[in-house]
Amino acid sequence: MGFAAIILAAGKGSRMKSAIPKVMHKLASAPMIDHVLASTEAAGAARNVVVVGFEGKMLKNHLGPRAETVWQNEQNGTGHAALQAREKLADFDGDAIVLYGDGPFVRPETMRAVLAKRSNGFDLVAVGFDTPSPSGYGRMLVQGDALEAIVEHKDCTPAQLEITLCNLGVIAAPAKLLFSLLEQVDSNNANGEIYLTDVVSIARKAGLRCGVVICPAEEATSINSRAQLAEAERVFQAQARAAAMENGCTLIAPETVHFALDTVIGADVLIEPNVFFGPGVSVENGAHIKAFCHLQGCHIAQDAIIGPFARLRPGAEIGASGRVGNFVEIKNAVLGDGAKVNHLSYVGDAGIGADSNIGAGVIFCNYDGVFKHHSKLGERVFVGSNSALVSPVEIGDDALIGTGTVVTEDIGAGDLALARAKQVNKKGRGKRLMDMLRAKKK
Image 1 (tube, helix red, strand yellow):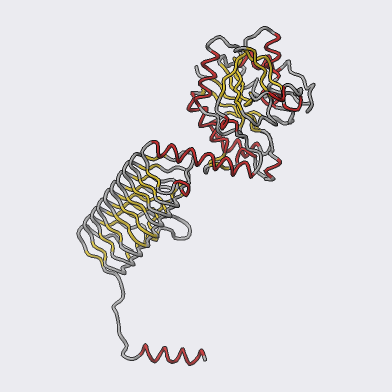
Image 2: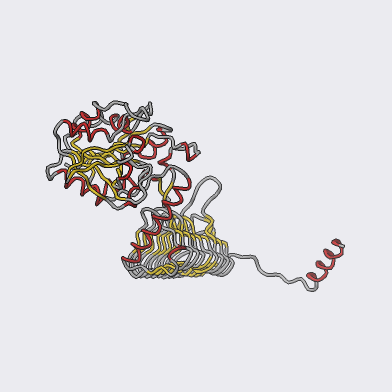
């Protein structure tokens, strides 16, 4: 039946010095809470329950149907926060895993390992990591394969401070058992708070079997400040670049390429330096992204070439072997297979058929100041340089639009369209006019 993820995200994050919830700050172009949800969903969560507090309405609106929310109106520790999900999960008979909205690097593999250990006879499972620098972390007290207790750093004895096995904070148990244990936790500790970790010692006193899953130390990243957010960004990008190259993508200068949480890159893709991937970008096999491109909410098909200095905005669809050149901006437009927009153009709200060619400096005039309008071009259409298409217009297959034309009416298949004023030369007028202007400047 899957498991329920209880994600603690009620804190303000005062060190962020921000008016928005800490977990809404972006990592790899997505709020850090989205990273946690991506992992729980990949691990097979049946329910995601997010505990909200500071600016909770903003967080709830962002989550939408992706997660259920419960409120922690009083900040009284991690155990108190997790307990707020009790009513929401009253009818849930599976396991619950408690996670943190500001801990974006816990992998699905770790959650699956926790569930596997639970099914192997352990009543409660906590996640730990080994580090040579354990200061500030709770310590895990282990005897053989049994977890005896987790002691918060402030409550550790000198001997316990020497332990290097630290608590990640992730705890799993049957939901009903977890809430039963939480109800027994008191606030008799250095912070006067209800600690989630105290459920371990309570479970042990009740004769329950507790175990540990050890994860890589990188998963212990917790973001509490802008500096830590920047460091987390560095870690994410390094991992994303390594994964892209491992999967067959060539990065000429990896350290200059910026990926988003949901970027999808195929095999044999070549990415040149200084390329930014915003959210919602997918690139098929064999595509070539040249230097200094900015991509967001777009799809690039097989063997297409983009850039350099191109901007693809949300809704841009580039067909197989399509070409988008330097200083071209495309928004909410589809380029058919083999279509080309190579120089200094803006294409917005349009469909362009296969093998069409859009000349240099062409503008799709898609906005009238109130509404957006859509234009449709057939296959093998040629639009001459410096033309303007005043949407909505429809251009038939094999039409030709002369250079400098302002298109305001539909053009039939195979037709030639010319719409520009006749050139008139006034003999000697140019020099006389310039001489007059220069005289005024003196």
